[in-house]
Image 1: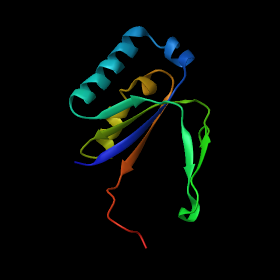
Image 2 (image 1 turned 180 degrees about the vertical axis):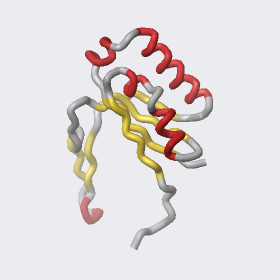
Image 3 (image 1 turned 180 degrees about the horizontal axis):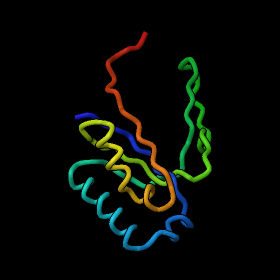
Image 4 (image 1 turned 120 degrees about the horizontal axis):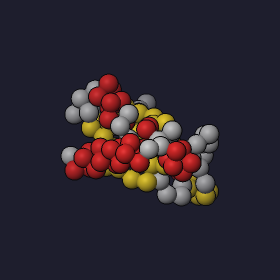
Length: 114
């Protein structure tokens, strides 16, 4: 089955402005997805890793990208197609609590890309 990476963006103020019953339903939807085998997690502190020309590993604290809202979490979900993945993402806490969720189709790695 196709896999998708989701990135949820949201902040506490948007979460707090959302009705508790809506938030609870979104958390229940996420819990169902986890029981079905999807992988979900809250975002921790990122680091950037570089190893240009495989010569020297450099690590920098902090994110590379910036957005209007902070990254709140990630998920690896399975869905039959993009429309189904969108329907799943639309029920997540970030989507319902004034945030946004990106859905990225994950193409399987097929070896070297020359």
